[in-house]
Amino acid sequence: IMAKKKTSLFECQGCGEQAAKWLGKCPNCGSWDSFLELNQDQQEVLKQTSKVINTTSKAVSITKIQQDNVTRFSSYNDEFDLVLGGGIVPGSLTLIGGSPGVGKSTLLLKVAGSIAKSGKKVLYVSGEESAGQIKLRANRLDSNHDDLYLLSEIKLEEIQDELLRINYEVVIIDSIQTIYSSNLSSAPGSVSQVREITFELMRKAKESDIAMFIIGHITKDGSIAGPRVLEHMVDTVLYFEGEASKELRMLRGFKNRFGSTSEIGIFEMTEEGLISAKDIASKFFDKSKAQAGSALTVVMEGSRAIILEVQALVTESTYPNPKRSATGFDANRLTMLLALLEKKIDLPLNNYDVFINISGGIKIKESSADLAVIAAIISSYRDRPISKESAFIGEVSLTGEIKEVYSIDLRLKEAQAQGMKKAVIAQKTNLKLDIKIFPVDEVSKMIELF
Image (cartoon, rainbow, N blue to C red; front, side, top):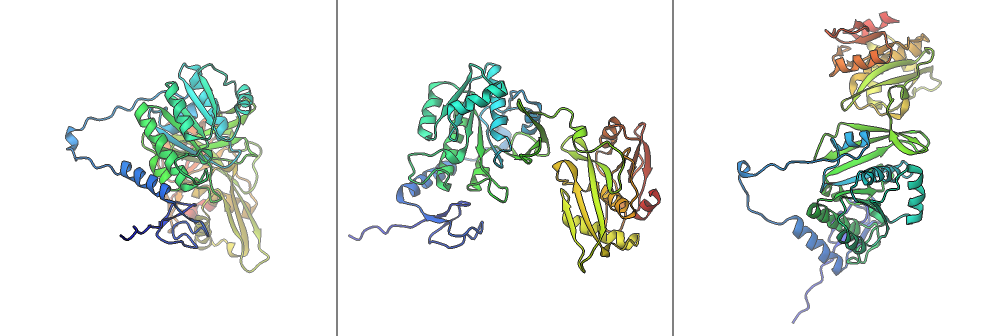
């Protein structure tokens, strides 16, 4: 009798791509020398996982299916609740990614302490720090409460035993890349380990209605390390943005089965940890004296209007190809606006280096700041300061037409609340405000304002 032929299976440790033979370069994520061969035990676990995920069930008419009522409880952190869609959903699995030192562990320990204070049992599992180290941070964050339990463990089976011992309502895993299962022989953090552990945690969360939060490391390009299937398995994916050297941090939702992904949470790093940035309005722009090359705009981040300062520097170029650089603004859009200014207003910008910066570290993802970018460029080119009491709000088209933007009333109310007196926008508004409105429909008319 011929022996059964062993089937080989190789898996990329960067993204989880599978192949029947070893490949030098992954066709999916482009990483080199990342394929490892799975042994028979690992292949068996992979089959079992896919069987459970792809369980067959009979189709039922949608009219006969009862709607799930999503209940929520507060994390006692306004910004965190806002990003989650109104609060924490029992049985949900949330993945939080961010660069080292940005404050992921600090935020979740603070939230864990607040939830435990309300009487709910919370388990904080750390595979990176000892319980004594976490206790030291908890003292600083004022998170010492009887219902907050610490477990310094990296073995999945031990964590599962602990979940059976006490009925926890919230579980935090810090981090998914450090936990390993004895079912697999591969190292912690490998694709097969991350997939197996996330699947087991997801099953436990759904069975026991436990709200689980998983902290994930990120790669150099900013995406969460491990297979892309990790993001598909969880209910919510949040990214923590911000530089460790700056006080402000932003929590942004990229996937949320229970709410919108347009909201962002803004936090401030203090001695007591990350707290909700209550007065964020003054954090992104400077109210000091007017300077050439600075213009203010109002952007929408979810349901929140934020005033941002657009800074421009226009200098004569010493090279045949002038430099174009943008921080926090789309570089391709900047090139388009510069070409438009050359054609419509005859500014000889092809002989000048142009640098654009959005203060506060925010990246503008909408086109309403076009008008402010143009105003800042003209201001820097002509060396004429723009009043800090003026806001520029509008999208600029390729024809030079200035278009209306959404939620203009909310933007103008925020501008008025911050003491602004003038607003240059595309359309007139019926809103009764103390701001003087300057409607401008063409870029060529912008020059009259300087």
